[in-house]
Image (cartoon, rainbow, N blue to C red):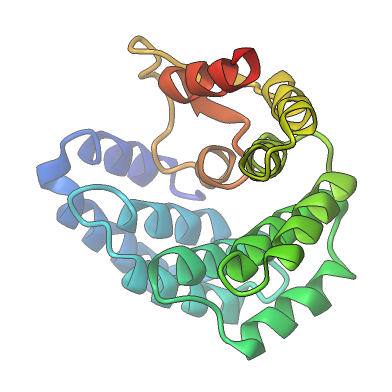
Length: 218
C-alpha cells in the first residue's frame, strides 16, 4: 500500500477479529481516494474472507470494482473465479470462456491456477475434463501442490495406487512452507499468501502435510 501507516494500523486491527469491521471501513475510505492502489484492493478483499466476516459475495463485489481500475490484474480475476466456483454457486459459461481466453495471454503459473479452478468446475459435470485440466495445470506449472495432490487422490480413487502416490509425492516435494503452531508471524492480508494457501497449495498446514504423507505411505 502507498499509505504504510494505514497498512500497519489495519494489520494490527485484524489481529483482533472483533475489529475487522473497523479495518474494513478504514480500507474503504482509503480506496475511495486511492482507487488505483492494487495492494489496497487486495488487502480489502482478503479481509472479507477472514472469520467472522467470511463474506465471499462482498469480496467478489470488491474484486469487480478493483478490476475496473486494474483491468490487467490477472490475480484479481483468479480470485474472483475461485470465490464464485467454491463459495457462490459455481461458474457460468461466460466466466468459463473468459478464463479459457485469459489462459492464452497470462504467464504459465497464472494459467496453471486457472486450469486448476476450471478442473474443479467440471469435477461433478465431466470427470474426464477434471482429470485433463489437472494434468494441464501440472504441465503449465510443475511447482504447485494442489494440482498434483488432487490428481493423485483422483487416481487413488480409481484404484491406480502407483500413479496416485507418484502424483502426491511430486506435490509434497513442492511444499514451500509448513504452518505449525508457532508459525504466526505472517501478513494475514497478503494476497500471495492467500493464493499459496488456498489455490496453489505450496503453503500448507502441518495436519494437511501429514495427511498427504500418509497417503504416500499406505
